[in-house]
Length: 412
Image (cartoon, rainbow, N blue to C red; front, side, top):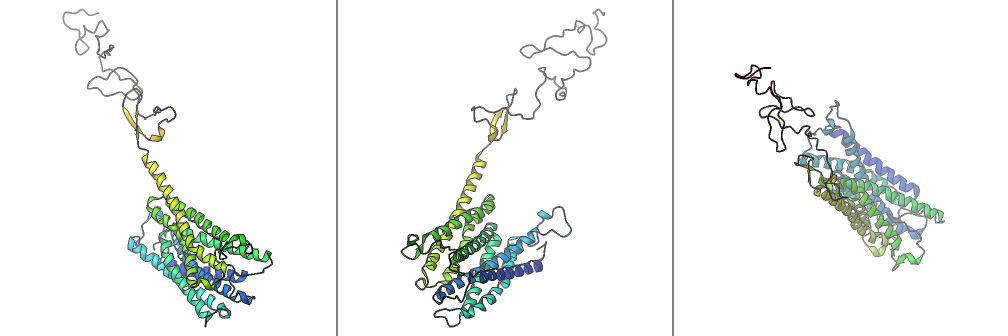
């Protein structure tokens, strides 16, 4: 790392991951989104599963955020010395092997920093009410540690693909916004602070029209799938314009929803043991991954189609004015309205005289007629282009050198 150095970037990854994990858990605990010991005893099992899902997801996203932030800060840092070509300078480890090694190092460093989430999850989870769990603290800490491992793997992917990193960051922001809205909706409805489900907001859980077979909440599923589609398309838009990044952009739509699906898959091993709203979220998460990939693939396909159209506009031969020669101009300069080639200024000098140049004499500058040789009369061309005799009556009396008259001829 020529700009910041290995030590500086690793320190940034550790610090940012630790700070992000602590901030997310503090935010969740403060708003009641994560509540290990709810006041309602009947909601203990639901709050326990929701807490495990949040703990796994927060640990994973904190790792990704720390690694991505360290890389982007390093890329924006100026090179010591301020060389004029510093922006295009090649780093010593910029090869394929060095790049992979750098990305793995940043991901592992971010995972070390995100281990703070294990401690911040284990301590409050001691008071959790969990069925068939002898030590809630150890179970919660284990889920957070697994989330860190998942985050390290995802961070390597995010460091290799900018579109995947943007997708994870956008998904994190959207899910926290959705959780805050769900908590505020519960407060306004008189239910007080209650734990929120990751990625699901129940607009009206008491209305039977919104439920399918009493366990699938279709408005929440539609919101989850729609957000995955939009985020996947927007996050891949920038990278899809570059041909060398198009494959990574097409797969980037799965980055954010995949972390949510893994968290639900690990925290909910038995679907029959959870509440109906959690069943709906658990069943929706895998489909959100597919829909997110569909959005990014659609954007990549449109970008490729646009690139092919631009490349298919081959050069068009347009005749040059007056000379009859062909010049090549881009296809978009040809008039399509009248079906005829447009007049194009080729930049070539136009002929200014109809008098042909004499053999062996240099051409005259552009815009000026060619000057005749010393002592020579300009020939007047006929209609067929052949010169005629000189109009000067004394031309025959002068010698070849234009001076002394020929013998036998009278001088004037």
